[in-house]
Image (cartoon, rainbow, N blue to C red; front, side, top):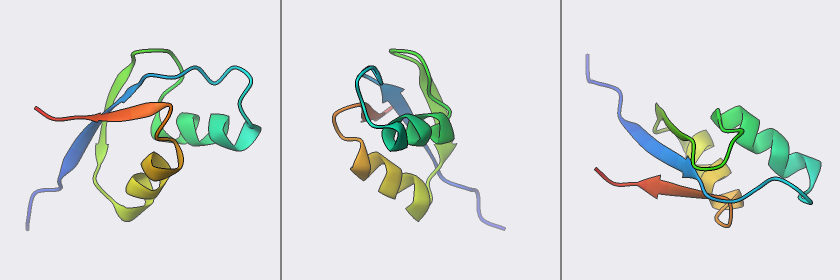
Length: 62
C-alpha cells in the first residue's frame, strides 16, 4: 500500500467581506484563522479548493 501524499496549506487572506462560499471552502480545508497551517491529503478536491482561493491560501513547500 502506497503512502498517502500530503500538502501543507497556510491561510494568508482574511475571509472578512468574502462570499459565503469562500468562507465554507476555508472551513472545509481546516482553516479559520490567519497564518494557520494545516496538512491535508493531496487529492483533486483539495487542489480544486486551492485553485478557487489563490488570494487566501498558499501551498508551503518543505
